[in-house]
Length: 100
Image 1 (cartoon, rainbow, N blue to C red):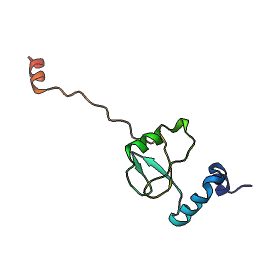
Image 2 (image 1 turned 90 degrees about the vertical axis):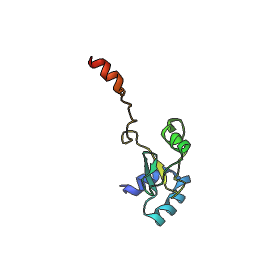
Image 3 (image 1 turned 120 degrees about the vertical axis):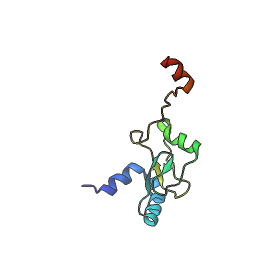
């Protein structure tokens, strides 16, 4: 029976296992979630282009890392905050005219 770490390592692949081992040994974990344009491990903001690349990675197989802490980033669209919806604001003049 495979241990959890062996299964996770199999999913990462041999090319990325050495750097992830080094990061995990130094920082406790080698993987961090990117949420609201921020690395959740080091709390540093991601550059806008890097954030867009991470969110739109359905076609790309390369692994992205945080530029600050070096951890591998993953993005879960279900946890991302919804975009702000603008509520139309009625002007005072329009509300006075409507009430007449």
